[in-house]
Length: 314
Image 1 (spheres, rainbow, N blue to C red):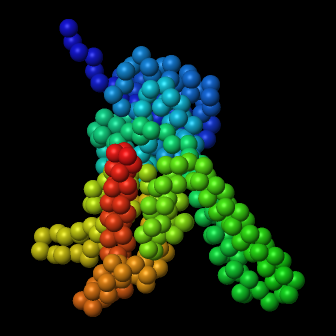
Image 2 (cartoon, rainbow, N blue to C red; image 1 turned 180 degrees about the vertical axis):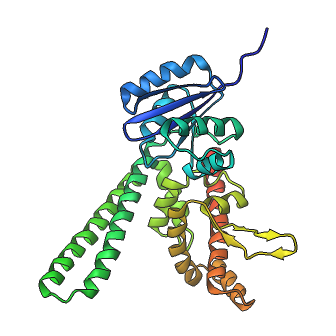
Image 3 (cartoon, helix red, strand yellow; image 1 turned 135 degrees about the vertical axis):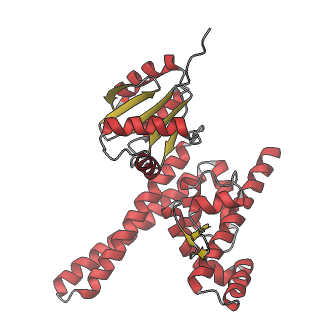
């Protein structure tokens, strides 16, 4: 009896629609990106016993689908759209439509083995929304503050100052809500306390890590650095040795970590000593700061790993 072929499913997610491709069957179909569409999709996927379901991150539009698949026992991997696009170019597929994208994602799922997300975390999801909203408010504050410095009209300056005060008050309200979200969950509060115990790690970085770096504590030191985007990549060819530079990773986590390291090089004895040694060896300030970010990422990963091990054994 011939064994059934392994089935791989690629899903292109948009605001209102899901384009689905099943490989190697070559079949494709489309459903709505709503509860009814999710139910129809799950009903069609269940009999296939797919080996891997992959969907692209799509600005949050994939979230409800992923939860529906997880609750139905169809664990899916959510991948970076850039990875899939680069894979499509490498495969010679330059055309781009939702249907073609779904086929590319299915081929990507068959070729690689992206890690599936297995444990929904509604607390981290809710916290992540607040982190994103707070970041948007802070960006507005920076833009408005820069504009205020150039305004000459007294009336406009008064308007801008009032808006700034309102935005800053709203940031404080959102931060208060984030504290309440963490405090309501004993495990999250324990993790938060573990993170902020490290000098240089403030509440904003701790909230960001809890929400957007959930793998922390289960990574190797190299994986932690690469996932945040502070691992230098070689650019060598033949006898030429290129300049090492960081690339990729989770930009928003890296941005918050950069701000934290500016404090850590002054107040964290371990990071401060490391930074001074690098600067004393002639390293440029930014190179030394990135190295300190990488070191702090490794420390955080180890701290969370030990914290979880202690919680499990308790």
